[in-house]
Image (cartoon, rainbow, N blue to C red):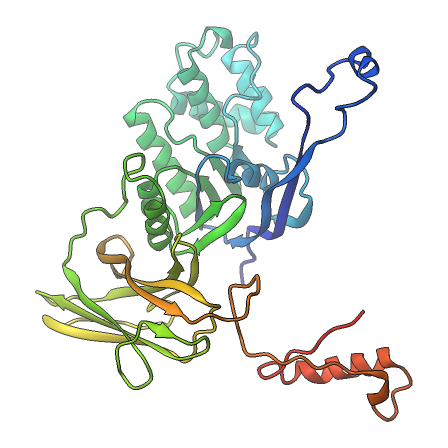
Length: 430
């Protein structure tokens, strides 16, 4: 069984902010009495980030500027150290974090190829063998022996990209650099990345294009202020992301649905099949999806998610994860999803429903934030979930026979409570 190429576990990165008038020299610091040298604030650029990327899989990362995308890619690439959590990468890394950062302006293009490729882990013999392919890919045959300072920015970026994709990495990190060169060269870059992916390279891609994420990636991660807002199917994640953004600044990836299979209506029903918009936490919910198709569909995928008013996803599933094959006959039909209990804390929520082709290449129909419901008020806790629980506190006067101390007795109680976790939650003392 293949092991993941990239493992990110509870990753966090904290940075310090300093005074805007921080002294720049020892003399300035001494004159100011060494004030303004200490950080004025600390902030988390990333918090509790966990995911895996398998060989031959591509993960797309979406998020607005400042969401922590580049910081995450840098930590995966070994640039900087996390404040908490860890990253494991199996194999050689090819990183497009800052195209041309390793170049020297006074060296020729040829010399820069050797320096950069050897720094990336190739031997001189390997660079010699691949040199022609690198230059041809970058389309710089006429200029390869000219100093880099004579290159345009586009030429430098093409050369850097060509070097990175010819090191044959096991893991490729791409930080928003697929817009290199003209359209023809961009197409060549995408084809090369697809070839690496087909050969088993794991790819982590940052892109501001939700459409590109849908077309290229196997899974998507949406970062919002350093935290995971959504992780899963790229079509669902990209759709939710786009609905949070300004429609004028980012085109929707599925703005024009084909509606070969159309959603006519979605009903939210209680345990007695009655329409419901107000639920108690822990009560069941049935989601009935009424659809219509004019011609027989060989197979479809139906996705259902539950999000709050600002688009944060709390539940996400689709029929493919359940291994269901859904061929449809022409006409009307209904598919139901039964949720035995919905342990959400009090608040306002939405059910979102999408219908996709069996390979996720087409979005037939998608309804986002059209079906609201409410979970009745629960005790005020900083929590998304509100599962059933019961506190048990053991005092000195109730020490169990055979347990010489309160601490040992509590440890025994905790061991027993693990066996009945579905019914109880026990207080844990140090």
